[in-house]
Length: 220
Image (cartoon, rainbow, N blue to C red; front, side):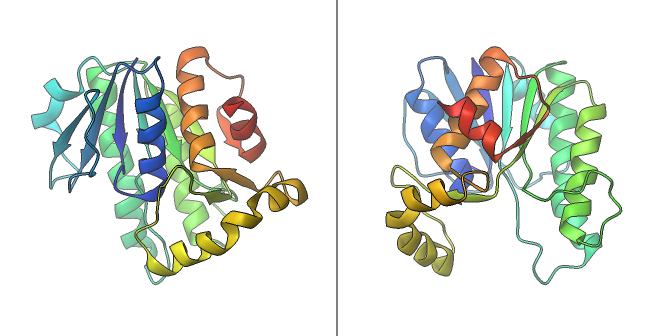
């Protein structure tokens, strides 16, 4: 399979890219980002760009992709709903629209989050916006799978660019096996997210919304 990855410079995206490069089922990886992802591999090529709202100049680059793993996202802390909508809903749907035009029916795996609000009516702003994004993806000519991970432990040397996040991961890392036994439905890893995405492209899945237990089961 040929896949495109958005958000490879982030923790989740970096973990997904590593799983793609390690998996023989993945023939090529196109990383779309603002800055180089810092990974060199014979299966990987990069498309660097500043505009994440208009992809008319990237149609040829997108042609032939079997799947997109969309791991791009920002924290909603301190953001107004209109601003968060622009960098979450608008950015995602712009990419999905261009990809669907180039490859109708392709698989689109979107990293949302545990607690996303499909009703779009709840009190949590981020959950409403993520829910609206998920719902729109399901209406598009794509095979959309909506990943809702809770806590994600970075694996295989993947690190967060946010210092205090990484400090937290450093503390929790040795305790992760214990926490997984205590709260298995709320935890996963970057490794499992990547493996689960590849698995749904290769064989499909009977759910479109994937919670932590689905992600972890698919990764096995």
